[in-house]
Amino acid sequence: MADRAVTVDGTRWSVSVLAERAPHGNSWRLVVGFRSPDPSKRSVWATWPSEFTSRSALFAQADRLSNDAIAGLLQQQLV
Image 1 (cartoon, rainbow, N blue to C red):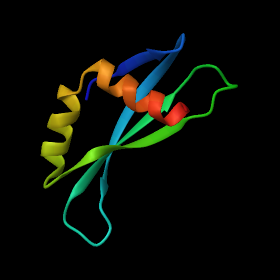
Image 2: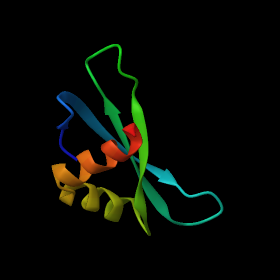
Image 3: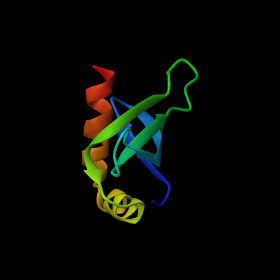
Image 4: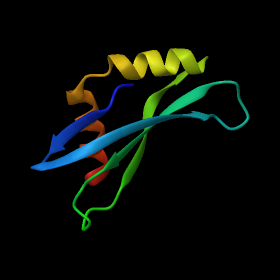
């Protein structure tokens, strides 16, 4: 996934993704990390609500996610 940033409630967040192996299984989960340049904001980590059979499928899906979808995931975590 190329470097991305999303803006939520006036704050710009840098977006990172990683693959996490599901415990006791063969599937992979997409974990999305959000960092703000504002030191008063904490970093946020969230799991995308899908599992994938391969890491390559996971990262291909990550590339197709819209910024709106990623921002929505962050908004859910900030509530």
